[in-house]
Image 1 (cartoon, rainbow, N blue to C red):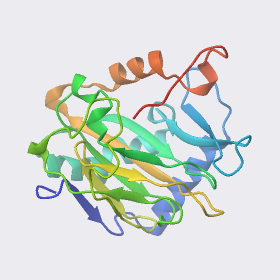
Image 2: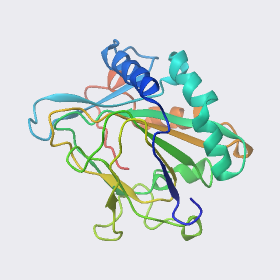
Image 3: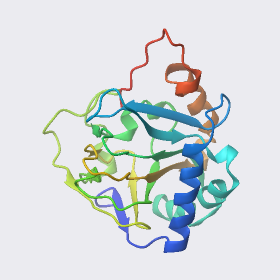
Image 4: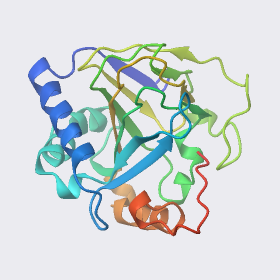
Length: 238
């Protein structure tokens, strides 16, 4: 982790634990989209542009005891604390569904998304719920040492060819820990099955409990689909 900015831990969760996470993810996807509850974002299919897909769900821990227990009080937080050397608090929770035809994400560092407003560093755990492969858009990573800082401007994806990203395929239960300066990306899902991955981001408690402020700021600029003005314009940047 100190050398490359990320750590891959195989079989972090057992099969029964992953089955539970998968079931909970399905429950969230099927639940009614209600203002004031978990946030659901959709996207147009890359292969069928008129077909709408669930892209990701965020801010669900306050409304789901099971996820909250695993994320806020389980081994993920303890490992994050050991890796960054201090008590951690939850900053952000999301599930990327990457449905068949779902788009990828351009190369970026998480810190580019205005996160320096809140804290100088974060650590994210990506939990593989489904198998991730180059064909379904697995995470692609490039090593990056913390002291090297941002590689580009805030709110702008990294320039093409700036970093040499390598695919990191995973099996259900594997976890990838990476800090907020590690460049990463993913390609679209060209298979016929979803590629669900849980992303949990923590910050050092010494920097404060920043979660409420982060989601308030995000709501003002990029609210969940259920709360959007039909005449408004919303652009995802990083």
